[in-house]
Image (cartoon, rainbow, N blue to C red; front, side, top):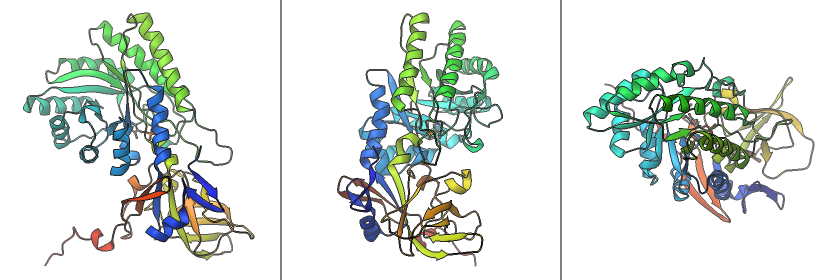
Length: 425
Ligand SMILES: *Cc1c(COP(=O)(O)O)cnc(C)c1O
Protein backbone atom coordinates (compact mmCIF):
# COMPACT_ATOMS: atom_id res chain seq x y z
CA UNK A 1 0.00 0.00 0.00
CA UNK A 2 1.28 3.46 -0.82
CA UNK A 3 1.45 5.86 2.07
CA UNK A 4 1.13 8.75 -0.38
CA UNK A 5 -2.44 9.10 -1.65
CA UNK A 6 -5.03 11.70 -2.66
CA UNK A 7 -7.50 12.59 0.05
CA UNK A 8 -10.15 15.22 -0.69
CA UNK A 9 -8.30 16.20 -3.84
CA UNK A 10 -4.93 16.78 -2.15
CA UNK A 11 -1.92 14.48 -2.17
CA UNK A 12 -1.20 13.37 1.39
CA UNK A 13 1.69 11.71 3.12
CA UNK A 14 -0.11 9.37 5.50
CA UNK A 15 -2.78 11.73 6.93
CA UNK A 16 -1.02 15.03 6.24
CA UNK A 17 -1.72 17.11 3.10
CA UNK A 18 1.53 17.97 1.33
CA UNK A 19 0.14 21.51 0.88
CA UNK A 20 0.21 21.86 4.68
CA UNK A 21 3.84 20.74 4.79
CA UNK A 22 4.77 23.23 2.06
CA UNK A 23 3.02 26.05 3.94
CA UNK A 24 4.76 25.15 7.18
CA UNK A 25 8.28 24.27 6.02
CA UNK A 26 8.59 25.78 2.54
CA UNK A 27 9.89 24.06 -0.59
CA UNK A 28 11.81 22.13 -1.76
CA UNK A 29 11.30 19.67 1.09
CA UNK A 30 11.82 15.93 1.35
CA UNK A 31 8.83 14.23 2.96
CA UNK A 32 9.18 10.71 4.35
CA UNK A 33 6.46 8.38 5.62
CA UNK A 34 7.41 6.61 8.82
CA UNK A 35 4.89 3.84 8.18
CA UNK A 36 6.32 3.16 4.71
CA UNK A 37 9.85 3.05 6.06
CA UNK A 38 8.95 0.57 8.78
CA UNK A 39 6.85 -1.54 6.42
CA UNK A 40 9.77 -1.82 4.00
CA UNK A 41 12.20 -2.77 6.74
CA UNK A 42 9.78 -5.34 8.12
CA UNK A 43 9.49 -7.03 4.74
CA UNK A 44 13.14 -8.01 5.31
CA UNK A 45 13.03 -8.52 9.06
CA UNK A 46 9.89 -10.70 8.94
CA UNK A 47 11.31 -12.90 6.18
CA UNK A 48 14.42 -13.41 8.36
CA UNK A 49 12.53 -14.11 11.59
CA UNK A 50 13.87 -17.07 13.56
CA UNK A 51 17.05 -17.20 11.48
CA UNK A 52 20.63 -16.26 12.18
CA UNK A 53 20.33 -13.30 9.81
CA UNK A 54 21.11 -9.61 9.90
CA UNK A 55 19.60 -6.82 7.82
CA UNK A 56 22.28 -4.15 7.41
CA UNK A 57 20.62 -1.08 5.92
CA UNK A 58 22.93 0.48 3.30
CA UNK A 59 22.76 3.94 4.78
CA UNK A 60 24.19 5.77 1.78
CA UNK A 61 20.67 5.55 0.33
CA UNK A 62 19.38 7.94 3.00
CA UNK A 63 21.38 8.69 6.11
CA UNK A 64 19.20 11.18 7.98
CA UNK A 65 19.65 10.52 11.72
CA UNK A 66 15.92 10.21 12.32
CA UNK A 67 15.66 7.57 9.58
CA UNK A 68 18.60 5.68 11.08
CA UNK A 69 17.14 5.96 14.58
CA UNK A 70 13.82 4.45 13.48
CA UNK A 71 15.69 1.52 11.95
CA UNK A 72 18.00 1.10 14.98
CA UNK A 73 14.90 0.71 17.12
CA UNK A 74 13.71 -2.10 14.81
CA UNK A 75 17.00 -3.94 15.25
CA UNK A 76 18.68 -2.97 11.97
CA UNK A 77 22.40 -3.22 11.37
CA UNK A 78 24.14 -0.88 8.94
CA UNK A 79 26.27 -1.19 5.84
CA UNK A 80 28.60 1.81 5.82
CA UNK A 81 30.99 3.10 3.17
CA UNK A 82 32.94 5.75 5.12
CA UNK A 83 34.12 6.76 8.56
CA UNK A 84 31.61 9.58 8.42
CA UNK A 85 28.78 7.09 7.98
CA UNK A 86 30.08 5.10 10.95
CA UNK A 87 29.97 8.18 13.19
CA UNK A 88 26.53 9.05 11.85
CA UNK A 89 25.22 5.54 12.56
CA UNK A 90 26.67 5.60 16.07
CA UNK A 91 25.15 9.05 16.65
CA UNK A 92 21.80 7.44 15.84
CA UNK A 93 22.46 4.76 18.46
CA UNK A 94 23.55 1.93 16.13
CA UNK A 95 25.17 -1.14 17.68
CA UNK A 96 28.73 -1.24 16.23
CA UNK A 97 28.51 -5.03 16.47
CA UNK A 98 25.94 -4.87 13.66
CA UNK A 99 27.95 -2.62 11.34
CA UNK A 100 29.73 -3.82 8.23
CA UNK A 101 32.13 -1.59 6.32
CA UNK A 102 32.11 -1.74 2.49
CA UNK A 103 34.02 0.30 -0.09
CA UNK A 104 37.13 0.13 -2.26
CA UNK A 105 39.12 2.96 -0.66
CA UNK A 106 39.12 2.67 3.13
CA UNK A 107 41.75 4.97 4.64
CA UNK A 108 44.01 4.13 7.59
CA UNK A 109 42.06 6.60 9.71
CA UNK A 110 38.74 4.97 8.80
CA UNK A 111 40.11 1.52 9.60
CA UNK A 112 41.36 2.72 12.99
CA UNK A 113 38.02 4.29 13.82
CA UNK A 114 36.10 1.17 12.83
CA UNK A 115 38.44 -1.13 14.78
CA UNK A 116 38.26 1.13 17.79
CA UNK A 117 34.45 1.06 17.73
CA UNK A 118 34.40 -2.73 17.24
CA UNK A 119 32.42 -3.17 14.03
CA UNK A 120 31.19 -6.60 12.95
CA UNK A 121 33.19 -6.95 9.74
CA UNK A 122 35.22 -5.23 7.04
CA UNK A 123 34.13 -6.11 3.52
CA UNK A 124 37.57 -6.05 1.90
CA UNK A 125 37.82 -5.40 -1.83
CA UNK A 126 41.52 -5.93 -2.72
CA UNK A 127 44.82 -7.50 -1.62
CA UNK A 128 46.44 -4.13 -0.79
CA UNK A 129 43.45 -3.37 1.42
CA UNK A 130 43.97 -6.70 3.25
CA UNK A 131 47.58 -5.72 3.97
CA UNK A 132 46.67 -2.24 5.11
CA UNK A 133 43.99 -3.57 7.44
CA UNK A 134 46.36 -6.22 8.81
CA UNK A 135 48.98 -3.53 9.56
CA UNK A 136 46.49 -1.18 11.22
CA UNK A 137 44.97 -3.98 13.33
CA UNK A 138 48.46 -5.16 14.32
CA UNK A 139 49.45 -1.68 15.50
CA UNK A 140 46.30 -1.53 17.60
CA UNK A 141 46.82 -5.02 19.04
CA UNK A 142 43.55 -6.18 17.47
CA UNK A 143 42.32 -8.74 14.96
CA UNK A 144 40.06 -7.40 12.26
CA UNK A 145 37.18 -9.55 11.07
CA UNK A 146 37.12 -9.64 7.30
CA UNK A 147 34.93 -10.79 4.51
CA UNK A 148 36.07 -10.64 0.88
CA UNK A 149 33.83 -8.89 -1.57
CA UNK A 150 33.95 -11.21 -4.53
CA UNK A 151 32.83 -10.26 -7.93
CA UNK A 152 30.67 -13.13 -9.19
CA UNK A 153 30.68 -11.73 -12.75
CA UNK A 154 26.94 -11.97 -13.20
CA UNK A 155 25.10 -9.42 -15.28
CA UNK A 156 22.61 -7.60 -13.10
CA UNK A 157 21.03 -6.09 -16.27
CA UNK A 158 20.68 -2.66 -14.76
CA UNK A 159 22.05 0.80 -15.62
CA UNK A 160 25.85 0.68 -16.15
CA UNK A 161 26.39 3.26 -13.37
CA UNK A 162 24.65 1.03 -10.83
CA UNK A 163 25.87 -2.35 -12.03
CA UNK A 164 28.73 -3.45 -9.83
CA UNK A 165 29.22 -7.20 -10.23
CA UNK A 166 30.87 -7.41 -13.65
CA UNK A 167 34.57 -7.99 -14.31
CA UNK A 168 34.86 -4.48 -15.71
CA UNK A 169 33.70 -2.84 -12.46
CA UNK A 170 36.06 -1.37 -9.87
CA UNK A 171 34.39 -3.32 -7.07
CA UNK A 172 35.45 -6.55 -5.42
CA UNK A 173 37.96 -9.30 -6.06
CA UNK A 174 37.60 -11.18 -9.36
CA UNK A 175 35.98 -14.56 -8.85
CA UNK A 176 39.00 -16.32 -10.37
CA UNK A 177 41.32 -14.61 -7.84
CA UNK A 178 39.09 -15.17 -4.82
CA UNK A 179 40.65 -18.44 -3.64
CA UNK A 180 44.20 -17.05 -3.69
CA UNK A 181 43.02 -13.89 -1.98
CA UNK A 182 41.37 -15.91 0.79
CA UNK A 183 44.59 -17.92 1.21
CA UNK A 184 46.53 -14.64 1.53
CA UNK A 185 44.02 -13.30 4.07
CA UNK A 186 44.17 -16.49 6.14
CA UNK A 187 47.95 -16.11 6.47
CA UNK A 188 47.80 -12.55 7.82
CA UNK A 189 48.08 -12.68 11.61
CA UNK A 190 45.91 -9.69 12.49
CA UNK A 191 42.96 -10.70 10.35
CA UNK A 192 40.20 -13.16 11.11
CA UNK A 193 38.56 -14.50 7.98
CA UNK A 194 34.87 -14.39 8.85
CA UNK A 195 32.77 -14.28 5.73
CA UNK A 196 32.15 -13.63 2.09
CA UNK A 197 30.12 -10.93 0.41
CA UNK A 198 29.01 -9.57 -2.92
CA UNK A 199 26.85 -6.75 -4.18
CA UNK A 200 26.11 -7.05 -7.86
CA UNK A 201 24.15 -3.89 -8.57
CA UNK A 202 21.17 -1.77 -7.75
CA UNK A 203 17.54 -1.43 -8.87
CA UNK A 204 17.30 -5.15 -9.73
CA UNK A 205 13.71 -6.09 -10.50
CA UNK A 206 14.34 -9.80 -10.89
CA UNK A 207 16.17 -11.90 -8.31
CA UNK A 208 17.63 -14.37 -10.84
CA UNK A 209 21.04 -12.62 -11.00
CA UNK A 210 21.14 -12.45 -7.18
CA UNK A 211 20.42 -16.17 -6.89
CA UNK A 212 23.04 -16.87 -9.54
CA UNK A 213 25.55 -14.87 -7.49
CA UNK A 214 24.47 -16.77 -4.36
CA UNK A 215 25.19 -20.10 -6.07
CA UNK A 216 28.67 -18.89 -6.93
CA UNK A 217 29.34 -17.81 -3.34
CA UNK A 218 28.10 -21.18 -2.09
CA UNK A 219 30.54 -23.01 -4.39
CA UNK A 220 33.37 -20.85 -3.18
CA UNK A 221 32.49 -21.45 0.48
CA UNK A 222 32.69 -25.22 -0.16
CA UNK A 223 36.05 -24.87 -1.91
CA UNK A 224 37.38 -22.81 1.00
CA UNK A 225 36.06 -25.29 3.56
CA UNK A 226 37.97 -28.08 1.78
CA UNK A 227 41.12 -26.03 2.36
CA UNK A 228 40.35 -25.52 6.03
CA UNK A 229 39.06 -21.95 5.66
CA UNK A 230 35.66 -21.98 7.33
CA UNK A 231 33.39 -18.98 6.88
CA UNK A 232 30.81 -17.89 9.44
CA UNK A 233 28.67 -15.63 7.32
CA UNK A 234 27.46 -15.06 3.81
CA UNK A 235 26.47 -11.54 2.75
CA UNK A 236 24.56 -11.31 -0.49
CA UNK A 237 24.47 -7.50 -0.63
CA UNK A 238 21.54 -5.26 -1.51
CA UNK A 239 20.13 -4.31 -4.86
CA UNK A 240 16.42 -5.15 -4.84
CA UNK A 241 14.68 -2.48 -6.89
CA UNK A 242 11.51 -0.48 -6.50
CA UNK A 243 8.71 0.52 -8.84
CA UNK A 244 9.34 4.07 -10.05
CA UNK A 245 6.06 3.93 -11.93
CA UNK A 246 7.18 4.49 -15.53
CA UNK A 247 4.85 3.11 -18.19
CA UNK A 248 5.70 -0.51 -18.95
CA UNK A 249 7.92 -0.93 -15.88
CA UNK A 250 7.99 -4.39 -14.37
CA UNK A 251 7.27 -4.50 -10.65
CA UNK A 252 10.23 -5.68 -8.55
CA UNK A 253 10.25 -9.14 -7.02
CA UNK A 254 8.56 -8.98 -3.59
CA UNK A 255 11.23 -8.93 -0.87
CA UNK A 256 9.66 -11.79 1.08
CA UNK A 257 9.68 -14.05 -2.00
CA UNK A 258 13.29 -13.24 -2.79
CA UNK A 259 14.44 -13.91 0.75
CA UNK A 260 12.41 -17.11 0.83
CA UNK A 261 14.27 -18.35 -2.23
CA UNK A 262 17.62 -17.38 -0.69
CA UNK A 263 16.93 -19.42 2.45
CA UNK A 264 15.52 -22.31 0.43
CA UNK A 265 18.84 -22.65 -1.38
CA UNK A 266 20.92 -22.11 1.69
CA UNK A 267 18.94 -24.65 3.73
CA UNK A 268 19.23 -27.30 1.01
CA UNK A 269 22.96 -26.68 0.70
CA UNK A 270 23.62 -26.74 4.45
CA UNK A 271 21.55 -29.92 4.83
CA UNK A 272 23.45 -31.65 2.02
CA UNK A 273 26.97 -30.65 3.06
CA UNK A 274 27.12 -29.42 6.65
CA UNK A 275 24.65 -31.65 8.55
CA UNK A 276 22.22 -28.75 8.47
CA UNK A 277 24.53 -26.46 10.45
CA UNK A 278 23.32 -22.93 9.61
CA UNK A 279 25.45 -20.06 8.35
CA UNK A 280 24.74 -16.46 9.27
CA UNK A 281 23.16 -14.55 6.36
CA UNK A 282 23.49 -10.80 5.87
CA UNK A 283 21.46 -8.55 3.56
CA UNK A 284 22.46 -4.99 2.65
CA UNK A 285 19.30 -3.33 1.27
CA UNK A 286 19.27 0.41 0.67
CA UNK A 287 16.83 1.59 -2.00
CA UNK A 288 14.11 -0.97 -1.19
CA UNK A 289 13.94 0.33 2.40
CA UNK A 290 13.65 4.06 1.74
CA UNK A 291 12.84 4.88 -1.90
CA UNK A 292 9.07 4.64 -1.85
CA UNK A 293 8.94 6.12 1.66
CA UNK A 294 9.91 9.54 0.31
CA UNK A 295 8.71 12.33 -1.96
CA UNK A 296 10.38 15.57 -2.96
CA UNK A 297 7.94 18.43 -2.61
CA UNK A 298 8.52 21.50 -4.81
CA UNK A 299 6.76 24.58 -6.19
CA UNK A 300 6.43 25.85 -9.71
CA UNK A 301 8.16 29.21 -10.21
CA UNK A 302 7.46 29.83 -13.89
CA UNK A 303 5.98 28.22 -16.94
CA UNK A 304 8.05 28.88 -20.02
CA UNK A 305 6.38 27.81 -23.24
CA UNK A 306 8.68 27.40 -26.21
CA UNK A 307 8.65 26.50 -29.87
CA UNK A 308 10.17 23.05 -29.37
CA UNK A 309 9.55 22.49 -25.71
CA UNK A 310 7.60 23.82 -22.79
CA UNK A 311 9.55 24.23 -19.60
CA UNK A 312 8.13 24.05 -16.12
CA UNK A 313 10.67 25.79 -13.89
CA UNK A 314 10.51 24.54 -10.31
CA UNK A 315 12.36 25.45 -7.13
CA UNK A 316 13.96 21.99 -6.76
CA UNK A 317 16.97 21.20 -8.93
CA UNK A 318 19.63 18.65 -9.78
CA UNK A 319 21.48 19.57 -6.58
CA UNK A 320 18.45 18.30 -4.63
CA UNK A 321 17.81 15.23 -6.77
CA UNK A 322 20.62 13.98 -8.98
CA UNK A 323 19.11 10.69 -10.17
CA UNK A 324 17.45 11.94 -13.37
CA UNK A 325 20.50 13.69 -14.76
CA UNK A 326 23.03 11.21 -13.36
CA UNK A 327 21.34 7.96 -14.41
CA UNK A 328 18.67 9.26 -16.76
CA UNK A 329 16.30 7.92 -14.15
CA UNK A 330 12.57 8.31 -14.71
CA UNK A 331 10.73 9.51 -11.63
CA UNK A 332 7.00 10.12 -11.32
CA UNK A 333 5.80 13.70 -10.81
CA UNK A 334 2.35 14.37 -9.39
CA UNK A 335 0.48 17.61 -8.79
CA UNK A 336 -0.31 18.04 -5.09
CA UNK A 337 -3.70 19.54 -5.94
CA UNK A 338 -4.70 18.39 -9.44
CA UNK A 339 -6.60 21.05 -11.36
CA UNK A 340 -8.97 20.93 -14.28
CA UNK A 341 -7.84 22.30 -17.61
CA UNK A 342 -5.75 21.44 -20.59
CA UNK A 343 -2.55 19.53 -19.92
CA UNK A 344 0.62 20.55 -21.76
CA UNK A 345 3.78 18.55 -22.24
CA UNK A 346 6.57 19.93 -20.06
CA UNK A 347 10.18 19.36 -19.20
CA UNK A 348 10.58 19.91 -15.48
CA UNK A 349 13.76 21.91 -14.86
CA UNK A 350 15.42 23.65 -11.93
CA UNK A 351 17.11 27.06 -11.69
CA UNK A 352 20.70 25.75 -11.87
CA UNK A 353 22.94 27.02 -14.65
CA UNK A 354 23.43 23.66 -16.39
CA UNK A 355 21.49 22.13 -19.25
CA UNK A 356 21.73 18.90 -17.26
CA UNK A 357 19.56 20.47 -14.59
CA UNK A 358 16.38 18.59 -15.30
CA UNK A 359 14.14 16.47 -13.10
CA UNK A 360 11.68 15.03 -15.61
CA UNK A 361 11.06 15.25 -19.34
CA UNK A 362 8.00 15.15 -21.54
CA UNK A 363 5.33 15.10 -18.80
CA UNK A 364 1.70 15.95 -19.39
CA UNK A 365 0.74 18.40 -16.68
CA UNK A 366 -2.16 20.82 -16.15
CA UNK A 367 -0.43 23.32 -13.89
CA UNK A 368 -0.07 27.01 -13.06
CA UNK A 369 2.80 28.96 -11.49
CA UNK A 370 2.72 28.57 -7.71
CA UNK A 371 1.31 25.01 -7.88
CA UNK A 372 2.99 22.33 -5.81
CA UNK A 373 4.42 19.17 -7.37
CA UNK A 374 5.68 16.00 -5.70
CA UNK A 375 8.41 13.86 -7.17
CA UNK A 376 7.59 10.36 -5.98
CA UNK A 377 9.79 7.46 -4.86
CA UNK A 378 12.45 9.99 -3.94
CA UNK A 379 13.49 8.63 -0.54
CA UNK A 380 16.62 6.81 -1.76
CA UNK A 381 19.68 8.47 -3.30
CA UNK A 382 17.92 11.82 -3.17
CA UNK A 383 18.92 13.91 -0.16
CA UNK A 384 21.99 11.71 0.45
CA UNK A 385 23.37 12.77 -2.95
CA UNK A 386 22.36 16.42 -2.64
CA UNK A 387 24.97 19.14 -3.03
CA UNK A 388 25.27 22.88 -2.55
CA UNK A 389 25.96 23.65 -6.20
CA UNK A 390 25.03 27.24 -7.06
CA UNK A 391 25.20 28.00 -3.30
CA UNK A 392 21.84 26.42 -2.82
CA UNK A 393 21.09 25.29 0.71
CA UNK A 394 19.99 21.71 0.87
CA UNK A 395 16.27 21.02 1.28
CA UNK A 396 14.47 20.52 4.57
CA UNK A 397 13.50 16.96 5.53
CA UNK A 398 10.37 15.97 7.43
CA UNK A 399 8.98 12.66 8.62
CA UNK A 400 5.23 12.18 8.71
CA UNK A 401 3.84 9.84 11.34
CA UNK A 402 0.07 9.52 11.00
CA UNK A 403 -1.24 13.08 11.35
CA UNK A 404 2.00 14.44 12.82
CA UNK A 405 4.89 16.09 10.97
CA UNK A 406 8.40 16.16 12.43
CA UNK A 407 11.10 18.38 10.99
CA UNK A 408 14.17 16.09 10.98
CA UNK A 409 16.57 18.39 9.13
CA UNK A 410 15.99 22.08 8.74
CA UNK A 411 16.71 23.85 5.49
CA UNK A 412 20.31 25.04 5.16
CA UNK A 413 20.87 28.81 5.26
CA UNK A 414 23.08 30.46 2.63
CA UNK A 415 25.45 31.89 5.27
CA UNK A 416 26.09 28.35 6.51
CA UNK A 417 27.31 27.38 3.07
CA UNK A 418 30.32 29.71 3.16
CA UNK A 419 30.92 29.66 6.92
CA UNK A 420 33.90 27.29 6.58
CA UNK A 421 35.67 29.50 4.05
CA UNK A 422 38.29 32.20 4.71
CA UNK A 423 39.54 35.07 2.61
CA UNK A 424 43.31 35.44 2.14
CA UNK A 425 44.92 38.85 2.71
C1 LIG B 1 24.87 0.82 -2.35
C2 LIG B 1 25.19 -0.49 -1.75
C3 LIG B 1 24.16 -1.29 -1.25
C4 LIG B 1 22.70 -0.93 -1.35
O1 LIG B 1 22.23 -1.04 -2.65
P1 LIG B 1 20.67 -0.84 -2.97
O2 LIG B 1 20.58 -1.06 -4.42
O3 LIG B 1 20.32 0.55 -2.58
O4 LIG B 1 19.92 -1.86 -2.18
C5 LIG B 1 24.51 -2.48 -0.64
N1 LIG B 1 25.82 -2.87 -0.53
C6 LIG B 1 26.81 -2.12 -1.01
C7 LIG B 1 28.21 -2.59 -0.87
C8 LIG B 1 26.55 -0.91 -1.64
O5 LIG B 1 27.55 -0.18 -2.13
